[in-house]
Image: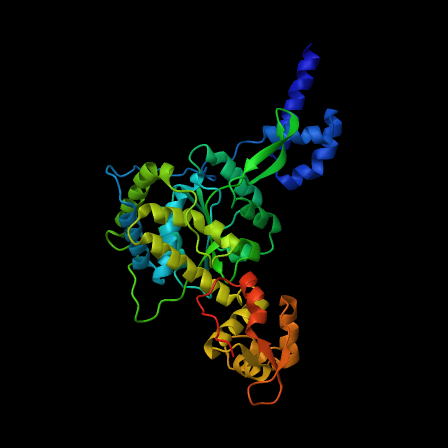
Length: 438
């Protein structure tokens, strides 16, 4: 019996020694040690890992999200949103439309579980020192149960969301997204998945010695901040906010100013009370402007629902703000498709001329004057030609025709009614009146 006890004690001492080694030293000794102990290398790894000391609590910090005490009295939704938009503009240089969208997005983090989609907030800037860090601090102070990360892995996202969702969820704020997100396809996929309530991933994990597939939720509000553009699939799920550097004539209130943090905390308490009172009653099918695409509509539904419930001028104000920020993004991206941009410019041209037919030469001349468009330098730095125009319009079923103007010689040109179907299919509705008959 003593020999057995001696052997067991020796085994324990060897395992303790191995557990004290740094990873490189252990790697060098693990095969020899497994033979000495008479067990497989994989089994030795598991035993040694279990014997390693727990991480020093002073060197690691668990995630604890703060809950806020709701305001004691009922809060009017329109006053809440107006005050919140004002607070944002006191600290960050933003157009009014962008501040309104951010105020609605902050409110939505408190009631996200009510909806099928949670829009991402995409915060971009062309350069440093445009207020990105300040805006993230405002979000951190006012959104529901915020967790800010300057870098995070794909598994970090879905494991964190799953771990905290039963405690009340979280709002994830990702900074420096431009530095690590672009090449990380798995992380982009996880963040895209979390846009929808049904979003989840499946991973095989060890449970009580057995490997089993386990589902992890990914649905939670996310704000992404960085310099430049987000990857297209993420940008497509975002309310786009573009920051600009403060000019010499503009002023902002620093967050360290007396009373600034108190005002943010007060707004957060108001949001907490509003979400308790109005969250369960928010409409699920607000009217979406026809000018929005399907994805823009999905993004906007929670924000429009909040605005409609708030009342006052917010139903109209929210729709104007969202159309404004989406419009700026679409213009910056060439209206998403160059063909759609060309159709849009030609629709405006036909309207300005008030004509049923326009000669190709007039169209080419007008396109050359649009300095902010790609047409003046369409190919190799040269303007679009009649042949290139016909080629660009061909996929939309629009082709040039020959017609004779009153009292003139035959010319090549385009007829307004030939664009009707393409304009209907690929452009938002327009208030442009029909052209008179020639």
